[in-house]
Length: 249
Image 1 (cartoon, helix red, strand yellow):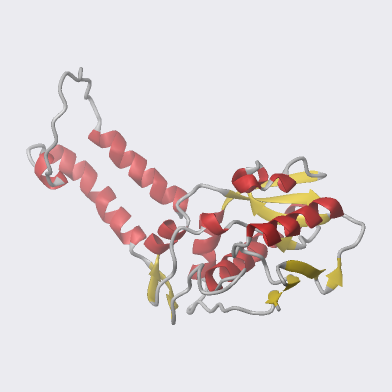
Image 2 (tube, rainbow, N blue to C red; image 1 turned 60 degrees about the vertical axis):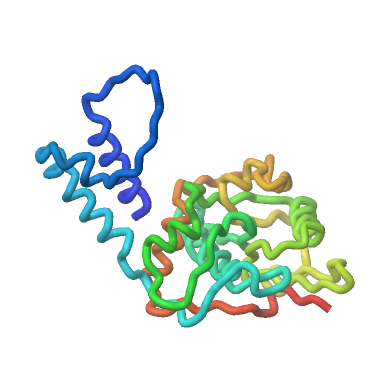
């Protein structure tokens, strides 16, 4: 879906720039409606109009319904929006990874800053997905040693932000110290873990250097934005809440 809309936007831009080559000697500004600018060229309007109509239909398409606001700021070290994003990423990443390798992933860890907008009460449209996730980041799966997983949770603790963490994990904290980390209900073991995240974070974005140089790396080439749109479109109602994945005493 995201790629189709991107194609329509690029097509429109290409049409609007057709056969133009100018030397810029002076820059002036004026607010004008696009229809006014192209009104003198009926052939251009005929080409552009179907793309405009299709783009408007796609971007305003209703995917689901939110009975309440879902934001990244409604909890401490977790949020209703972050929990939703992490859990739907797990669902998609796990499905892709099983198809590719026959193995399951262990959990998802993403970044607070990757969520650029909340989901507000009411109809949830394609436009809301683009507002939430405007970046073309893709899902990757990294195989991490126990030491790197420990570094991940140390970062989570010290960074003190509600980074999306999937429900396969339970972190218990007291006095700003991590007391216990459970993955699938078990303490950390001397083995490797398969963690889904974004390609941006895997390259060290947001200082998440523990994702670098993993034991193995799987590139899905599947946009996180498309995973969000796919999940939203498969649910009549979006439900997410704070739970026991992060316990603070």
